[in-house]
Image (tube, rainbow, N blue to C red; front, top):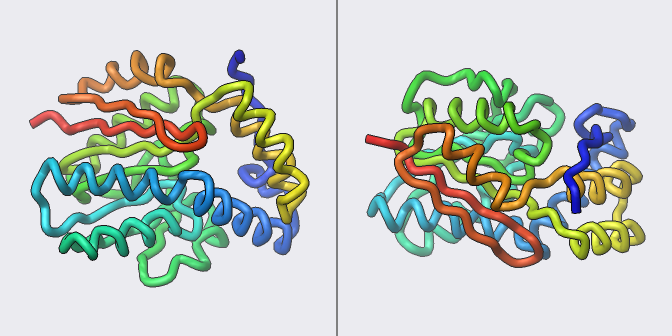
Length: 224
């Protein structure tokens, strides 16, 4: 299935306040039941395990309400690891339900933080919005801002996945999600496409794995 770029309605703020709230609620539901929360949690657990860290600071880019960071915080706490998160999104209204985490409005391609500000910089359902040159720019920026690793949790493009997103339109609350869900799958990357892009970052080590319901995860370890 060939990648096709389609501007998504939520990204373009092409909805009223209620439609945006409903679309964010749809995303929380999809993350909860279709692998999103679990994948982010596994990635952060992987970093904690490999680095033997008892505390991790985490910048969640394109975070919206930050449900992935919150779920990971609960899971890591059960393992004796403290996770402190900061959420970054380009739209302030997306951060309204951030809970205990701090929220920052900013550009993912020009992160408003100094070098090595966080142990981990990551994203969930964000990278597929970027063109290949922007994936490289974001990854380099994330590596600049992190101390240990960059994590990416995103969709993996496949025809069956696209058909499932089309069928799911009957369940979504928002018309934005009914358009955006299939569009997201069409513009998602495959592991074979991600690997050569990320090798250009000059990272120390790359790990790419697949997870439940067409999720793809990446760990980019910072070179020391």
